[in-house]
Length: 251
Image (cartoon, rainbow, N blue to C red; front, side, top):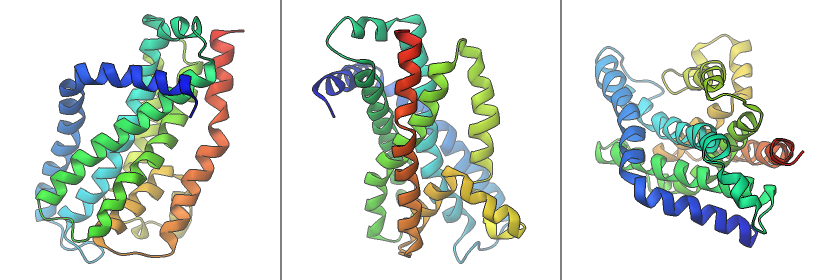
Protein backbone atom coordinates (compact mmCIF):
# COMPACT_ATOMS: atom_id res chain seq x y z
CA UNK A 1 0.00 0.00 0.00
CA UNK A 2 1.55 3.30 -1.11
CA UNK A 3 1.52 6.46 0.99
CA UNK A 4 -0.92 8.16 -1.39
CA UNK A 5 -3.23 5.15 -1.46
CA UNK A 6 -3.24 5.28 2.34
CA UNK A 7 -4.21 8.95 2.16
CA UNK A 8 -7.09 8.15 -0.18
CA UNK A 9 -8.21 5.42 2.21
CA UNK A 10 -7.94 7.78 5.18
CA UNK A 11 -10.01 10.40 3.36
CA UNK A 12 -12.82 7.88 2.87
CA UNK A 13 -12.49 6.81 6.49
CA UNK A 14 -12.91 10.40 7.67
CA UNK A 15 -16.12 10.65 5.65
CA UNK A 16 -17.37 7.37 7.14
CA UNK A 17 -16.82 8.75 10.64
CA UNK A 18 -19.43 11.42 9.86
CA UNK A 19 -21.94 9.11 8.18
CA UNK A 20 -21.39 5.82 10.01
CA UNK A 21 -24.83 5.68 11.61
CA UNK A 22 -26.73 5.90 8.32
CA UNK A 23 -24.34 3.44 6.70
CA UNK A 24 -24.64 1.00 9.55
CA UNK A 25 -28.40 1.07 9.92
CA UNK A 26 -29.31 0.54 6.27
CA UNK A 27 -26.73 -2.21 5.76
CA UNK A 28 -27.82 -3.89 8.99
CA UNK A 29 -31.60 -3.74 8.62
CA UNK A 30 -31.91 -5.65 5.32
CA UNK A 31 -29.91 -8.77 6.30
CA UNK A 32 -31.56 -8.69 9.72
CA UNK A 33 -34.99 -8.75 8.06
CA UNK A 34 -33.90 -11.69 5.89
CA UNK A 35 -32.74 -13.45 9.03
CA UNK A 36 -36.07 -12.86 10.76
CA UNK A 37 -38.30 -13.71 7.80
CA UNK A 38 -36.40 -16.71 6.49
CA UNK A 39 -34.72 -17.95 9.65
CA UNK A 40 -37.65 -17.72 12.03
CA UNK A 41 -40.48 -17.87 9.48
CA UNK A 42 -39.38 -20.54 7.05
CA UNK A 43 -37.27 -22.10 9.79
CA UNK A 44 -40.45 -23.20 11.55
CA UNK A 45 -41.31 -25.31 8.50
CA UNK A 46 -37.84 -26.66 7.76
CA UNK A 47 -36.13 -29.20 9.97
CA UNK A 48 -32.37 -29.49 10.24
CA UNK A 49 -30.18 -28.64 7.26
CA UNK A 50 -26.77 -30.30 7.09
CA UNK A 51 -27.05 -31.19 10.76
CA UNK A 52 -27.90 -27.70 12.05
CA UNK A 53 -31.09 -25.71 12.48
CA UNK A 54 -32.27 -23.71 9.49
CA UNK A 55 -31.85 -20.49 11.49
CA UNK A 56 -28.23 -21.32 12.12
CA UNK A 57 -27.72 -22.40 8.52
CA UNK A 58 -29.05 -19.16 7.06
CA UNK A 59 -27.67 -16.91 9.80
CA UNK A 60 -24.06 -17.85 9.12
CA UNK A 61 -24.63 -17.44 5.38
CA UNK A 62 -26.01 -13.94 5.90
CA UNK A 63 -22.64 -12.84 7.31
CA UNK A 64 -21.04 -13.41 3.91
CA UNK A 65 -23.90 -11.85 1.95
CA UNK A 66 -24.00 -8.73 4.14
CA UNK A 67 -20.28 -8.22 3.66
CA UNK A 68 -20.64 -8.73 -0.10
CA UNK A 69 -23.40 -6.13 -0.40
CA UNK A 70 -21.42 -3.64 1.68
CA UNK A 71 -18.37 -3.90 -0.62
CA UNK A 72 -20.55 -3.93 -3.73
CA UNK A 73 -22.54 -0.80 -2.92
CA UNK A 74 -19.44 1.08 -1.82
CA UNK A 75 -17.55 0.25 -5.02
CA UNK A 76 -20.53 0.99 -7.27
CA UNK A 77 -22.73 3.81 -6.02
CA UNK A 78 -20.17 5.22 -3.59
CA UNK A 79 -17.33 5.24 -6.11
CA UNK A 80 -19.55 6.50 -8.94
CA UNK A 81 -20.68 9.49 -6.89
CA UNK A 82 -17.05 10.39 -6.18
CA UNK A 83 -16.15 9.89 -9.83
CA UNK A 84 -19.05 11.45 -11.69
CA UNK A 85 -20.87 13.87 -9.40
CA UNK A 86 -18.41 15.06 -6.78
CA UNK A 87 -15.36 14.89 -9.11
CA UNK A 88 -13.35 13.73 -6.11
CA UNK A 89 -11.08 11.58 -8.24
CA UNK A 90 -10.29 14.49 -10.51
CA UNK A 91 -9.30 16.57 -7.50
CA UNK A 92 -7.10 13.77 -6.20
CA UNK A 93 -5.29 13.60 -9.53
CA UNK A 94 -4.27 17.23 -9.02
CA UNK A 95 -2.14 15.93 -6.14
CA UNK A 96 0.78 13.47 -6.37
CA UNK A 97 -1.75 10.60 -6.18
CA UNK A 98 -2.02 8.37 -9.25
CA UNK A 99 -5.04 6.53 -10.59
CA UNK A 100 -3.61 3.34 -9.09
CA UNK A 101 -3.49 5.05 -5.68
CA UNK A 102 -7.11 6.15 -6.00
CA UNK A 103 -8.33 2.71 -7.05
CA UNK A 104 -6.34 0.92 -4.35
CA UNK A 105 -7.62 3.34 -1.71
CA UNK A 106 -11.18 2.70 -2.86
CA UNK A 107 -10.74 -1.08 -2.85
CA UNK A 108 -9.23 -1.11 0.63
CA UNK A 109 -11.99 1.11 1.97
CA UNK A 110 -14.66 -1.14 0.45
CA UNK A 111 -12.89 -4.14 2.03
CA UNK A 112 -13.01 -2.35 5.38
CA UNK A 113 -16.75 -1.76 5.03
CA UNK A 114 -17.14 -5.43 4.18
CA UNK A 115 -15.37 -6.27 7.42
CA UNK A 116 -17.49 -3.83 9.45
CA UNK A 117 -20.87 -5.01 8.20
CA UNK A 118 -19.87 -8.66 8.22
CA UNK A 119 -18.77 -8.17 11.82
CA UNK A 120 -22.11 -6.60 12.76
CA UNK A 121 -24.06 -9.62 11.48
CA UNK A 122 -21.54 -11.95 13.11
CA UNK A 123 -22.24 -10.28 16.46
CA UNK A 124 -25.99 -10.62 15.86
CA UNK A 125 -25.90 -14.32 15.04
CA UNK A 126 -23.50 -14.90 17.94
CA UNK A 127 -25.95 -13.15 20.24
CA UNK A 128 -28.66 -15.50 18.98
CA UNK A 129 -26.51 -18.46 19.97
CA UNK A 130 -25.86 -19.56 16.40
CA UNK A 131 -22.04 -19.54 16.57
CA UNK A 132 -20.55 -22.52 18.37
CA UNK A 133 -16.82 -22.20 17.74
CA UNK A 134 -13.98 -19.79 18.50
CA UNK A 135 -12.78 -20.46 14.95
CA UNK A 136 -15.48 -17.95 13.97
CA UNK A 137 -12.98 -15.22 14.89
CA UNK A 138 -11.15 -16.07 11.66
CA UNK A 139 -14.21 -14.83 9.79
CA UNK A 140 -13.13 -11.25 10.51
CA UNK A 141 -9.79 -11.25 8.64
CA UNK A 142 -11.40 -13.35 5.92
CA UNK A 143 -13.95 -10.58 5.38
CA UNK A 144 -11.12 -8.36 4.09
CA UNK A 145 -10.23 -10.91 1.40
CA UNK A 146 -13.91 -11.40 0.62
CA UNK A 147 -14.61 -7.66 0.44
CA UNK A 148 -11.55 -6.86 -1.65
CA UNK A 149 -12.62 -9.31 -4.33
CA UNK A 150 -16.19 -8.08 -4.64
CA UNK A 151 -15.01 -4.48 -4.56
CA UNK A 152 -12.59 -5.23 -7.41
CA UNK A 153 -15.34 -6.62 -9.62
CA UNK A 154 -17.76 -3.83 -8.73
CA UNK A 155 -15.22 -1.05 -9.29
CA UNK A 156 -14.36 -2.53 -12.68
CA UNK A 157 -18.01 -2.12 -13.68
CA UNK A 158 -18.09 1.39 -12.18
CA UNK A 159 -15.08 2.46 -14.23
CA UNK A 160 -17.07 1.60 -17.36
CA UNK A 161 -20.49 2.80 -16.18
CA UNK A 162 -21.68 6.06 -17.76
CA UNK A 163 -24.96 6.49 -15.86
CA UNK A 164 -25.88 5.63 -12.31
CA UNK A 165 -29.03 3.79 -13.45
CA UNK A 166 -26.83 1.17 -15.15
CA UNK A 167 -26.04 -0.25 -11.72
CA UNK A 168 -29.52 -1.78 -11.79
CA UNK A 169 -28.18 -4.21 -14.39
CA UNK A 170 -25.14 -5.06 -12.26
CA UNK A 171 -27.19 -5.65 -9.13
CA UNK A 172 -30.02 -7.54 -10.86
CA UNK A 173 -28.06 -9.63 -13.34
CA UNK A 174 -24.85 -10.26 -11.39
CA UNK A 175 -25.04 -9.68 -7.64
CA UNK A 176 -28.57 -10.97 -7.02
CA UNK A 177 -28.10 -14.32 -8.83
CA UNK A 178 -24.90 -14.85 -6.85
CA UNK A 179 -26.82 -14.07 -3.67
CA UNK A 180 -29.66 -16.47 -4.43
CA UNK A 181 -27.54 -19.39 -5.64
CA UNK A 182 -24.60 -19.28 -3.26
CA UNK A 183 -25.88 -21.74 -0.69
CA UNK A 184 -27.17 -19.16 1.77
CA UNK A 185 -30.80 -20.26 1.70
CA UNK A 186 -30.49 -23.92 0.75
CA UNK A 187 -27.67 -26.47 0.51
CA UNK A 188 -26.39 -26.73 -3.02
CA UNK A 189 -26.11 -30.50 -2.80
CA UNK A 190 -29.88 -30.55 -3.40
CA UNK A 191 -29.25 -29.31 -6.95
CA UNK A 192 -28.36 -31.50 -9.96
CA UNK A 193 -24.72 -32.51 -10.21
CA UNK A 194 -24.01 -30.10 -13.08
CA UNK A 195 -25.43 -27.21 -11.05
CA UNK A 196 -23.25 -28.11 -8.07
CA UNK A 197 -20.15 -27.89 -10.25
CA UNK A 198 -21.43 -24.64 -11.73
CA UNK A 199 -21.70 -23.22 -8.21
CA UNK A 200 -17.89 -23.20 -8.05
CA UNK A 201 -18.00 -20.36 -10.55
CA UNK A 202 -19.97 -18.30 -8.03
CA UNK A 203 -17.48 -16.33 -5.87
CA UNK A 204 -20.01 -15.85 -3.10
CA UNK A 205 -20.37 -19.63 -2.79
CA UNK A 206 -16.73 -19.85 -1.72
CA UNK A 207 -17.21 -17.14 0.89
CA UNK A 208 -20.38 -18.70 2.27
CA UNK A 209 -18.64 -22.05 2.63
CA UNK A 210 -15.71 -20.53 4.53
CA UNK A 211 -17.87 -18.44 6.85
CA UNK A 212 -20.36 -21.20 7.62
CA UNK A 213 -17.71 -23.84 8.30
CA UNK A 214 -15.72 -21.51 10.55
CA UNK A 215 -18.87 -20.55 12.44
CA UNK A 216 -19.66 -24.21 13.01
CA UNK A 217 -16.06 -25.14 13.82
CA UNK A 218 -15.91 -27.57 10.90
CA UNK A 219 -12.33 -27.14 9.71
CA UNK A 220 -11.80 -28.95 6.45
CA UNK A 221 -8.94 -28.82 3.91
CA UNK A 222 -11.35 -27.60 1.22
CA UNK A 223 -11.69 -24.30 3.11
CA UNK A 224 -8.15 -23.42 2.12
CA UNK A 225 -9.07 -24.03 -1.52
CA UNK A 226 -11.99 -21.60 -1.24
CA UNK A 227 -9.71 -18.93 0.25
CA UNK A 228 -7.01 -19.47 -2.37
CA UNK A 229 -9.57 -19.15 -5.17
CA UNK A 230 -10.72 -15.74 -3.89
CA UNK A 231 -7.15 -14.50 -3.40
CA UNK A 232 -6.15 -15.71 -6.86
CA UNK A 233 -9.16 -14.07 -8.52
CA UNK A 234 -8.46 -10.80 -6.72
CA UNK A 235 -4.81 -10.87 -7.79
CA UNK A 236 -5.72 -11.61 -11.41
CA UNK A 237 -8.40 -8.91 -11.63
CA UNK A 238 -6.91 -6.09 -9.53
CA UNK A 239 -5.21 -4.48 -12.52
CA UNK A 240 -8.46 -4.21 -14.47
CA UNK A 241 -10.20 -1.38 -12.56
CA UNK A 242 -6.91 0.53 -12.54
CA UNK A 243 -6.52 0.27 -16.30
CA UNK A 244 -10.15 1.11 -17.02
CA UNK A 245 -10.17 4.02 -14.60
CA UNK A 246 -7.04 5.39 -16.29
CA UNK A 247 -8.93 5.39 -19.59
CA UNK A 248 -11.88 7.10 -17.90
CA UNK A 249 -9.89 9.83 -16.14
CA UNK A 250 -6.81 10.44 -18.26
CA UNK A 251 -7.17 9.25 -21.84
